[in-house]
Length: 100
Length: 181
Image (cartoon, rainbow over the protein chains, first blue to last red):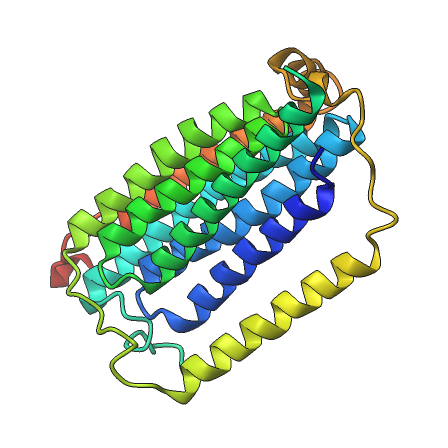
């Protein structure tokens, strides 16, 4: 029987990879994918806790978080599309309209 | 199958899926090509779905494949195709302070997470015997349509609002003529 620690450690590692990805990439779409990766890592730890407690509530929370992630991806990609149309770039270092 | 062999099989499967997930996540953030990143994200999501199956959350594993690997990645690929992005320069070509800081920050956060995990390791739950029944569609639907019905309906409103908002943000605006302003 695998202890729950391993699932949580896997979740932590994937979360950190997503975090580093957000910090090092400059392409806005890849940054979005990294955010999805981080959401997914947190979902994994929720499912692990839910399964080890034998309680279904954690999986319900994951269900809602999937729905919110889908909504977030749709809106984010629409924003990227709009920015690209005005700016002809998805490089976040070149999108500096709101920079002081 | 004897119990010992079953446990060993579970561990092998977990290690396989975990290595696949971590490797594809690393490949995703390091790959130069955006399409490759998206496809590696699919691989990562599929291996996480496999881990869900190990945790006997069958419904979520299916939803993960259908919603994430199906719908969201197709959306990403469509946007990549529409935007026709020129390739990002690889960050291995020149080492910048930014990357070192990012990797250091990542290492610190991973260390913190694992340290805190190690600190509470006695408090973590043992595997529950109810586990086999917690992830079925019946169990989830039972709770979802009674206790969480309101939140479920709110999800519907959220998704509708997201679709309308996305259409509004992304639509092509015609150039206004001077007299219309």
